[in-house]
Amino acid sequence: MAMLADVKKRTVRINGCVASAQAAKYADVDVIAAYPIRPYTATMMALAQMVANGELDAEYIVADSEHSQLSIAHGAASSGARVFTGSSGVGVQFAYELYSPISGSRMPVQMMIADRTLDPPGDFGSEHTDALSTRDMGWLMGWSCDAQEAFDNHLIAYRIGEDPRVLLPQMVCQDGFFVSHITGDVELPDTGQVKEFLPPYKHPYPLDPRHPVSHGPQIMPEQGPPLQLERARAMEESMAVIEEVHDEFAKIFGRRYDPWIEEFMTDDAEVVFFLQGAHAVTARYAIQHMRDRGLKVGMVRLRTIRPYPTDRVKDVLSKFKVVGVIETNMGIGGVSSGGVLYAEVVAALYESQKRPLVLSFMAGMGGEAIVLKEFYWMTEKMMDVQKRGKIEKRTHWVGFEE
Amino acid sequence: MSYTELTVWTRGIIMDKEGRDIVNSISASARLEGKYAQAMENYVDNPDRTNCPTRKYCRVSDGVIENALTYENEQPNIVVLVEGTMVKGWDYMRGMPPGGTLVINTHYTPEYMIRFVPGAERLAQLVCVDAAHLADHKWLYYRLGELGLDRLSTEGAAERNKSVAPDIAAPLIAAVVKTTGIVKMETIEPMIANKKAFEMALHELHVMSLNPVAV
Image (cartoon, rainbow over all chains, first blue to last red; front, side):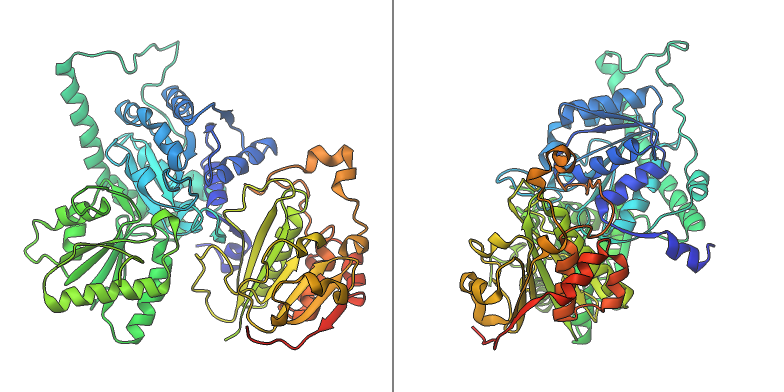
């Protein structure tokens, strides 16, 4: 364990975007495929400076669109490079065609997502819809809630994705502004620690003229199912690897994250929030204030949504009376007519013997900050449901109701 | 509990670093003093465009800052105008509680400038400092040889000059710290690159004391 003084010396105050760029530098990436879109732009600018200053030896390619950006990432990964790319909002959507081919060819490309609301109306704020709309494309996916966690998640994700048992691409997501543009203390590791944790990447079958192989050939329909099954299995089997890697991360870096969920003040909680990302920061304060008033409220924060920890979510949430899902995403016309997270929660709980009542809160839409009094309002709604023992209104748009 | 919000209004690109230096150095000093502090740029103003108004925020508190994720300072106690003509045209006084401080970079006196300030009755003091003169500022417009170098958008903090407050930010920081005591002089002084302008400003502030009233 490093001495406290050493740790202090290495602690820098940077925002989430710069933390991601630092993580890519520590991961010693070979190829960076960039195309500007806010808020991700700050990451590509920081990386450009590192390459220009000679701090990072990498091919820095500025693409002509996000579609090309991901195509470059795919090609570079196929030749065996460790690749870093990223985007936000509509940029994530413009590259959509590439997500399935990249995971289908089992290329552990890493993509940093700094969430941004989709158009309309051209809003910079964070909504998780951009990344979540690609959630079933075979990419590992999870959210960080501050700059330190963003830094750590990048290293963790490379290690998981590049594991020969997994070989899947990763979306390492952070909220635009709330994480990407707010500074926090980030402890930068020793390069020795990172070398120990993240060995150089070696793809088993890279494109190499000296050892010819085929990638992504046209196939017959009957050859499709085994490929799809393999990709699905890789995702399923990654769960054991994810736990292993988090253990190892804690051993080397001294910071332990539960790979799947963070529980906050849930021991005797009756009603809990279920959410992803940065709003957890305000939720923690809100919960502490409500605890002072004697309310039995807590929070469950999902850290990894792909692969989805179905059994863990079921076991954890079955302890409570009411769960309020804070969506920060759009699922128009979906199961709850609110966001998509509700469906994931309710499906996980279906097999439980003790199902809590589940509400969907449309809050933080368009990247609006969810303030303390909105958490109090949502708690009141949950406690009302607890008292009545049934749900009269499944989805609430916070700020639009009494 | 003491909680202070500082909002800096500046001009995109050409004076953006000045604004950033003010909020960053004050927040860093507050943290050194064991307080909780946060500095950030207005998310919607960026990426900045040449000359467009951009805002920078700083929050200093004795306790944990619970509204850390809110985009803007809703109740600025201190407002700084990095460029004097910004005194007209924007409601930079919006939300200021009675007893606030306004600092302007100008060669005019507070007696002259106060007529342009919207909602001046909330001010406890209006501070004018001729920061451009004190820092011997050569306006970037005329530094043609360097113009290309300095015209970088701030998204990603692409800064060529790594020093803190080498130019007009130094006298403005001196004005804020001396008239509000938001941080201690001895904490912030070592961070400032342009020490000469910083020291001179301490003696050349034009402060107009006012009796603030609630609006």
